[in-house]
Image 1: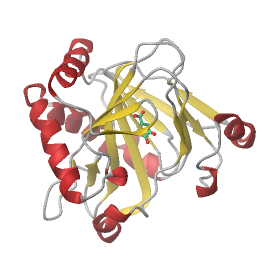
Image 2: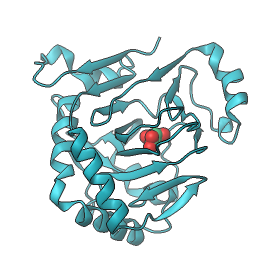
Image 3: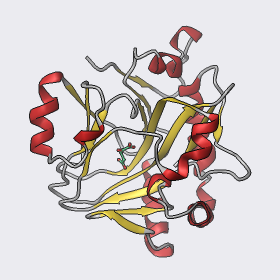
Length: 252
Ligand SMILES: O=C(O)CCC(=O)C(=O)O
């Protein structure tokens, strides 16, 4: 059974509820920090991007990213430049402060900041998934070429994913976590094959409202986003987290 927990605004958390530690220990699969962004802010962010920034590309059919996702980026230079462009376009919303505050609730005794080497990594990207788009099954890994600094510095045995939905479709576009342990060979399978293989081992569909922050154990659980079967387009804003020596650090 994958354990999920929600934290309402103002809810006090004792040290015994250290969410990041509990997720690392495998006791928690997903955490929702409620109402991090107001629905009107979620809408305003989407409009700002649609009017002022071209998405970087379409790494999957019907899937666009604003800012580059590190594992799909062609170089650290383009990753940095696109991340800066995104942050500048959304400067008036101060997304990073809101995100770090909410991720700090998840982190508990672990402070959270963007991953920095000789340069800071972008904390988030924004992704849109249109009608008939889906995100095939995967789990977060650290063997991507542009993750050298991550492999040197971070404890990548645990890699968490986080995102805030900005807009959700009426049909599909749901995140499913599977209990069965990650196997790289699963990647590339169809959703029907994935369900047949992983469904019997147990799964959890995670419900998050626009503006809530979801953090889940993306390195531990195979996960996928189901096909969007009815509009509007699914929009999310998010990235990844891992433990550094004395803090949690994020990148996208
Ligand atoms: O919903 C998204 O945009 C991405 C979900 C996902 O697969 C992840 O964050 O690892």
